[in-house]
Length: 383
Image (cartoon, rainbow, N blue to C red; front, side, top):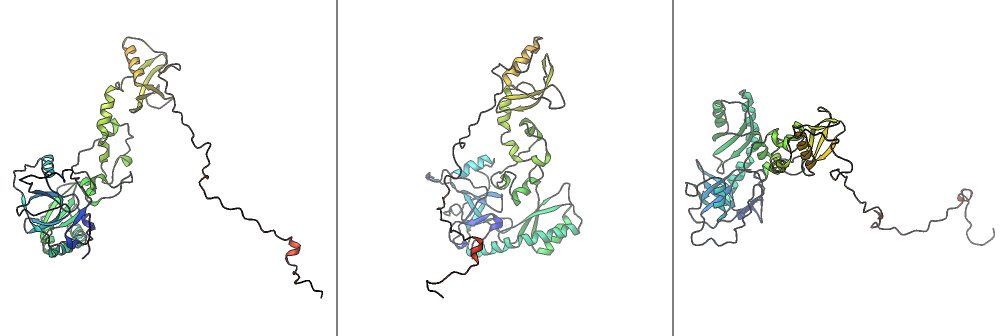
């Protein structure tokens, strides 16, 4: 049997799945302690990854020689589940601390390395997930439930299935569980997820052209507010700020702290600058250039003037002392925003200098039109 477990986000490292070695690209953790000796008491807790972003930690009670990418059978409730070892060694302890899990707590067990029969049963369960999800959606719609079933995950032994659903309000799905149990003859578990979690499980390509962060490396979702967009001087356009989940993009939080730290040196934007020409009101800010744009119209961007932060602070201090400046920025001042000069490095170069030059071929001389249809003589004999 070949190794084609795309719904799990996995692919074989080498050979086929008979070798029990599978590597998954989602949420990988680089084990930088892999070549460090473990000592007398090695770490007997391993991290096991399941479908999409679900991970859990198990204790290796049988002291199996486990490596990253191996398929193992682990304890489940009820029965057993099949997963892929994603991390071993002392780095697991750091992951436990990161997730606020006590290493002295109770962990489920790793039974054995998965046998060929286990992998075949696991593969058959995976093949039924999409069909089960579509059928479950039809059943929920017939029952009139205001919910969306976004994904289904079968347990490795095929005796249990977890249905992930999205609902804006509370849903009474007791009748749904009865119908699903009768339809599929398995144990049913319902788990509610949010829009961000659904996007992470389904995956996709973002507006940046790369795979969604929530489906590759983000393990915990932090709430994103419009303040992150305001602090970065972004246009509050819902179509541009929203991701595929319909919520604000998670990447708005990535550089938010840097913008907040940089803006600590900036004056309050609510303060109007008083000049002899009138009051100037702040409209926008360029954090990296440390420039602030002001206009003499409070509601419209009319004759925007770029003023450096140092100049703005000077004007505010003079206004506090009752002084009015003549202009926001003097023409002969060092604060003028000089445009960046660019040099055209290709002005003296030809874009076709690396092209292959075709050899000049001698054109065949064409006969005049009046001689084209005239028959040619053969030989020098007289008729």
